[in-house]
Image (cartoon, rainbow, N blue to C red; front, side):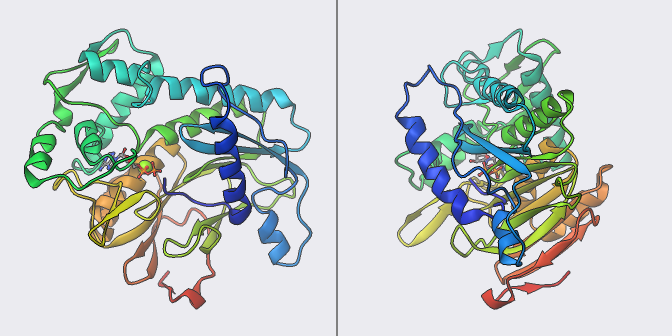
Length: 373
Ligand code: ADP
Ligand code: MG
């Protein structure tokens, strides 16, 4: 799980582990989400403000829940009714039940199993339809039909291993997005063995829906953070933009290379540093290149996408990681929506490409990084 860490990153990590332990100790199906009420006064920018000599901000309040294998944190003005958080978590839990390939009863798992399923929930249809559009848009760098390949690598499971070249070829033959057909009601695969894996886009979609639920309830300021996916609504209570740190991909979880100041935007980071395994001294990460079947290696170690649409941002963070800087620049130049990219390459060069949607402040000169603007 790559992520844009909010600036209270070390605090975040502690609470994330704590939240995982707690959730694991609960009865599985009884509890869909959980609040963590401790440590609430420290919000996103808490540590940052402290670091820059200001008092921590207590005008906002955070509630957390463990959904989609991620600690989801919702930060809203302190006077927001508790029901607002609960409605958002319930919506996200509902989407997890639709999209998760791991949950045997999800719509996606049932579709993978049965090869055809109709009717599908409108949100599943919506996400599948967007996914196929994005596959075309990215020339296949984003591919939602890579379930056979991601299962073969097992990077998110207990026993990941490097598959044989033949096995990779066989799995790749089952990753054809053209095998997926949608008819406005349901979906079907025209070939046996093709499976959906929406891991690169589902969180972005859920974050968008969460933001919509908040807006419907009249909430105009806040942050939804799902690890690497962040949506910011409006500005902070103080009238200043939210600050979102970009994690140092080579550093520890509490280190950042800089931060963005954003309002009404989605910010998503993907990197090879979060989920990986090592075999014979080589590191294999979880973003796979659909052209080769192996972990993508286009020279980037972290991709941050800023745009209004969180689903697009999530999809693009994965696709740009696969495509590399040059092709990414061409791709975003073709989009109708304004998009900003903050890329970090293997040479520790940080570049900002595309539209200037929010200012990036570089803070990691000491770590050997170079910001090239
Ligand atoms: P994260 O889920 O860690 O935030 P991403 O958004 O980049 O990171 O999604 C990575 C996940 O998406 C992988 O774990 C896998 O399930 C799936 N995936 C990997 N490579 C691709 C790809 N090229 N296209 C679509 N999905 C991918
Ligand atoms: Mg993604």
